[in-house]
Structure formats: C-alpha cells, structure tokens
Length: 497
Image (cartoon, rainbow, N blue to C red; front, side, top):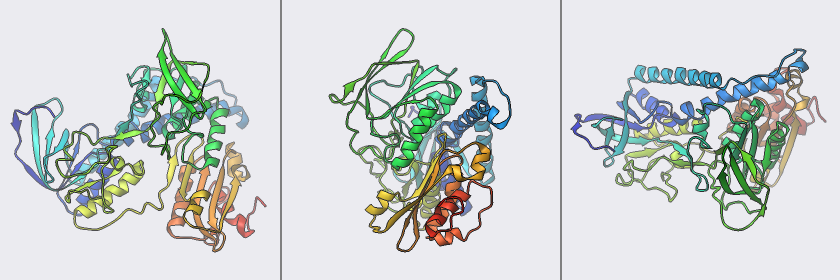
C-alpha cells in the first residue's frame, strides 16, 4: 500500500465487503436488503473476474465461434455461404460493449440499494478496521466496520517454465486483449479454461494444440464426458496430447518451440481441472518432436488473491496454498471476518461464490446459515457444452450406494437436435435401482448448461425417475432428452429401447 499524506475521517459500517465480484456483490446486496449499512471496496472494476476477464467476455468470444461454426455448415441448412472472415478487433469491441453495459448496470444497482462504493485497495487493520488506498493517490480512507466479508477472488497461476509476458506467453486475461489472433497456439493445461478457449479458437481458424499432464482432459471429470469432449476437439482440428509433460518452451526468431515428453505420471492430487500445478518435474517420459507455435496460453489453475490484505494480522488463518480457512458458516478464525468465493479454494464458479456471499451476509448479521454444496451444477462452456450435477457412477459407489445404475441417451434421438444439426452428445442419468432415486446427471451437448438446471432441481427435491417422468416436457425440445433418460429404465422411453 502506498504511503499516505492524508487520512479521511473514519466512516462506520455494519458490513464492509472487500471485492466486487459475484461473491462480494451478492454479499453487499443481501446485507443492504437486510437494512445494514454497507460499503463495497473494489480495487479494479466492479464485477470481478467473471464480468471483466472471465465468464462474460469468454462467453462472448464463444458466441462468435458458434457463429463461425454455423456459417461453415450453412449449406446443410440450404444456405450457400462463403468462409467466415474473423475481424478480431470487432470481436473484442463487441466483448467490451457487453462487459461495459453489464458493469454499468451493477453500478446503478449498487447505488439504488444505497451501497457505498469505495475504489481502492483494502487492507485490514485488525478485525474491525479497513484502510483503503486510492489508486494513483496518497489519500487513504479508514472504514470502521462491525464485520468484514473478504471476496477478493483469484488470478491465473503462473508457470515457472515460461512466465507470463503478455505477448508470447499468455494468461487467460491476456488472451482477451491480444491485438490479433495467432495462427498457431499452444494451450498448456487441458482443464476447464484451456478446453474452453481451444474449442473457441479452432473454429476461428487457429491451429490449437492442447497439452494435458493427466491421462485425460478435464482431470477429475467423468471419463465419458472427457473422452467425448476430446473427440469433439479433435474433430474441430485441435491436437490434444494427454499424459504430456512440457519440458521447455524456447523462443525462436519468429515463434515459440514447445518441447514435450509423454508417458509421465500426473501430478499427485491434481483433480478437478480447476486447481492443478503443471510445473515440470525432472525425469520421466519420452521426448516428442518439438511443436512450433506463435503464442502459448497457460491455463494451469488459479491462485487466491489473499496476499497483502492484512488477513493474518486480523486473525485469519490461511492454508499453505494461500486459501482462507473458514467454518461451515463461512466465518474465519477472526469471528467478525467472513470469506467467500475463489479464495476458499472450493467450487471456483461465479454462482457458488454468489450463494456463499449471500450466506455470509446473513451470518454477518447474526444468522447461522450454511451453503448446500451437495447440489452444485458444474458447467463448462466448451463447444459443445458440458454440465454435471450430483454424483457420477464411481462417486455414487464411493458414497455407499450399492445399487447404482446408469441410463444414457444419445443426443441424436432428439428431433430438436436434428433440426439444429447438433446431434453429438448424450445425457447420462445415474440412479439407485433399489428405489429409483436420482443420484446424478451428466450432459454433453448444445445448451447443456441450461438443461442442467432441471436436473439440479430434481436432485435438490430428491426426486425419483418416476417423479421426473411425470413432468410433461414440450416437444420438440432438447429438454426431452432428460425425460428420455429417466423414462428408459422404467420402460417408458419413446425414442430408444
């Protein structure tokens, strides 16, 4: 924090939220709705990673990729088209317009809800005082508060083999502002972010190569889904190397050279595809011919923004990885400090952070609420999309279910999918055959991230297959696929045996 020449008079609040992303904004709005006096401190832009450098801008680019794919298939719809031409500056301009519009909306909502917005970097001075240093200024603001909710998010994890430089070695943030698309791109890390960008850039004409240390892309994900996505990526022209260890990235005169060994063991504990360390280790593997690329995108996980916040001095306990330790009520060791979102190292999604923010706000004002992590949809906005909720077949057995069964319905049986020329994918329902209780749902296919909401509701309500089948589903819709998957074990499926 810069040195201060002046100090504004202390201002008192019931709740001070540090970080204006999905978790922080949800916490501030919920506390304000409860009548609390709330301030929201944000060092950069309101909306956090999700709105500014994550979910929204990358989905905007994904939408462009979808249009490219559709244009190339135009003749299959009876429409003659020419090859699409990507005007990358226009793609970025559209992305920026969307982000700016949504960010302005958040600012207006905060003002309408009488949330005090404070721009600057916050540091805790004990559990009840926050000092905010304004960017580019020596002025600080002192905020006295009864409770603090920390929601400072995470950032791309750097890679020792090739540190970020913003030009040739890119983070996911960097990729969203490069002036032009590369002809050839290496993606280090085949987790969620890496696979999403690979699936977006390939339809735009970029030659993409993905390197994943684990035996499959999306480590920790259902192997059926991971294998289906890898097949889709390969069909789109993406080269995918699994069990692959990148041993060096060397700069050439006009490109970068990727040196790889295969056959290495995956890093211990590297599940989930969201928090992994792909740093190289000596030994192991067999050398492969080097691959020449123009740029390298490093997507090996994210690290929490918990340094230099004064957390330890305020009595907050951090894990060795820098995540905040909290109890089931999201309360840190310091009883008046709560933490939510990516800094917890749990489900690194905007919607989970939002729920945590709302719960933390309630608890900061005296409640004892908890977050139900048992039914959290996991959505991947790859092309095609993927979404899961509940238990996979192996996980169901690990949880003690002894009569686990699976119903799987291919996307191609859907009349709606046929009309859309989107027939790749499937819906898989995991259930307990002893009582027909739904245990989990996995989907890969167009709009999977929208379809998973019904499955989440069914799991939340502890529905059986019969309960789900009794709900009428309109025809022709993609949602019928979930109905078919539930109906099949009951002998009621219409389009499959």
